[in-house]
Image (cartoon, rainbow, N blue to C red; front, side, top):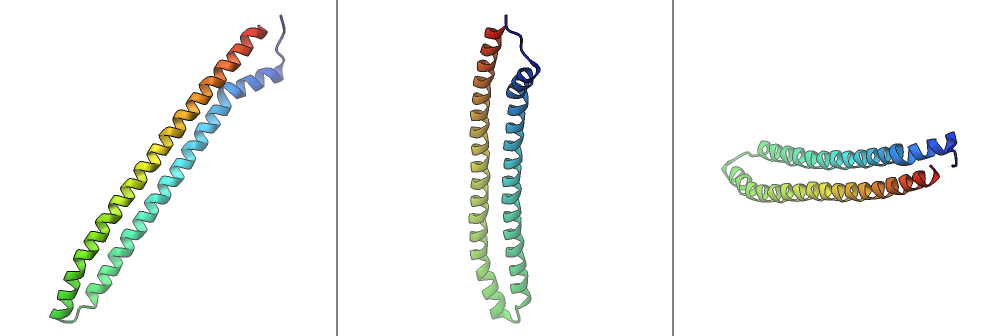
Length: 124
């Protein structure tokens, strides 16, 4: 029977527990950063659109200007609806990517744990 030294035990512990935990934490941090940036971009676009509309309204001086402003609101509403749909699609894509990467990571970690357990049982 072969004895396992401290370095081997530490390596096995790292392989089975710490490395997967670090990989999953890195995946979560990456996902959170992507989601935050997507939300930040969307928020900025919505604020910019709102501010542009307020400025346009402040420039209305007469009935013709008001009519023109109101006609432009249809385009703004259409563009905003398209932006909201695009932002929602982006979030869904980020979530799907995260789930696929999580599943792949889990499968890799299970395989690694099985290999490590097999090695440990052979050395015991």
